[in-house]
Image (cartoon, rainbow, N blue to C red; front, side, top):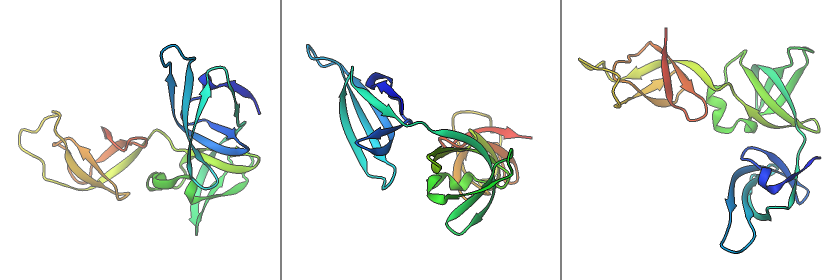
Length: 188
């Protein structure tokens, strides 16, 4: 695995720390007075989800895990697993649902998902940055409503609730940001 300087560590990276794979949650660069610079790194151990924290010197080396990234097509759920297909080899792969966590609500058949593998084992998944969903329920349209800063709650067809502009109504399709679960735009 490649060694990188502690100052090059970024949130979202997977590193091998004390012979255990960890996903970096946050990185804080500190320069305390006359002391040498240091990097405070918060990590989550992948095998059990336990949070860890470590302070590195700015010249310390960190072992960055070499991950293979594949874009796979989601096919269907099977118990605790998700079945994906590699569109180049047509090979089907099983991935545990836990890899997506709360983002499972955005997963739809035929969606292209980027999955990271380490030594053949799935380590992480990244959904497309946005998805199109339909509004199932929301308050009625307000008269003279415009696109001001006020939003009303809307329940979507995947079960989540997001804030939408007051002129939106049930049955309309909207684009939702999968990272922060916010309304982006109306889709025609």
